[in-house]
Length: 231
Length: 314
Image 1 (cartoon, rainbow over the protein chains, first blue to last red):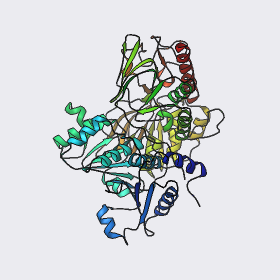
Image 2: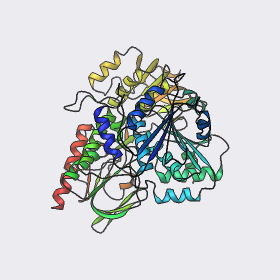
Image 3: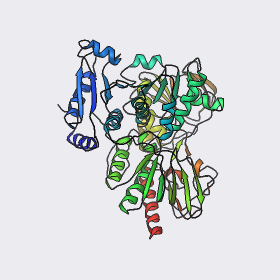
Image 4: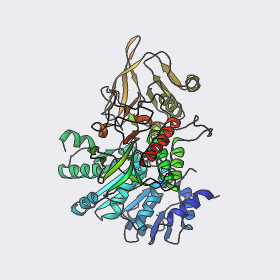
């Protein structure tokens, strides 16, 4: 049975009309020990038919282990969105609810004609001399989450020193527990600093600059850190 | 399966003159955007990083005329899609400042600046903080202002809800589907919420109400472990895994403090519903001092404000 309704499919087809170049989407799923893989695969198969610009490939981390290793896939379901040259932009979990919106936006960012990042963020990324992993914890019912998820994905798409992972917190409870996630969105940076909530590009780049320069040695809320240190 | 198809907007480094800037992303701003687009007013909507405003965080809406029941997320998505279908233009940015400059308003957003002949302030309100010890420290570590977003983290947990209005009771009911036990504390001896909602909560199987009780302190280590309450019998320490706060709203008017008259509580002082102390600045929705704060009144304000701008531009 189809997951996308006729009206969803019509809306997405209209949105995909903005694609001016190919977007490569790799979907890693498996049958065993992954209750949400079937839905994820179904959604992506249905999206695949809605634009010729969308090139979706389906892989299994067990049988395609070399690809999974190269792509850095650590859990399933995993979705990687790119122009075909990298695997820096990842989504872990079913793209349902507001996460569907984040995935669609990232596809349009990748294959559309406009650069969505502001000049200030582009300058920050151009000056970046260290690697950043941004792990954004989200839930499908959180309307503020796409803002944080898409910002991390945009930064990773733009600069090869940044990787983004948008993680559905309910589907990966062990990871949520590891980072003590009890509210979303929460963006964990390099496994140490974090930002609570959805914030502007300017606030995020300020927080990242401060966190990377001063390198707090323990888990630190970057926004509190900025406020307290007078950043 | 519910799939949200609305795209996330992008920022801008634009600087230009236009007839109208609408600040905000909730129902008041979306209605103003729909009307402005249909009036063919040259405009932009500066929606914040929390699109949909407070309405988007409401689990269920049952009092919007014509719609029996809908989620907050769905109603604001439908409003935005409708506005966009008529040509409304959105930018994802928060207003940082708004200053009068000759006969226009200079509006600085995150990385863009606009010179607007008219401004509609529809920036809504954010959940108010109670200011008790532990509230800031445990935000995101058990303290939450969004049950719709964070309820799944408290499955089978013991949760405290603070407040007694519509939001507190509605969100407590939403939470009660997830948690093992829910306690709601209210400083008065009856709820301010609609009687229908209050009755539903009072008959909820895993909910308990503590009247005439206030929250004194939130305690914990890495996350929330419990609270100290002021009860009619004196201080009482109780264990909880999560605290959800619904103790009122703080209007988002800081960027406009030098532009128009505000009331002591921070709301925009209005006359004739949407007019402010400056003739080319209008206000709509929860940011105003209008008495009823509902989606139905917010969209009405938004329509009136856009219509007032249209009349002025003629």
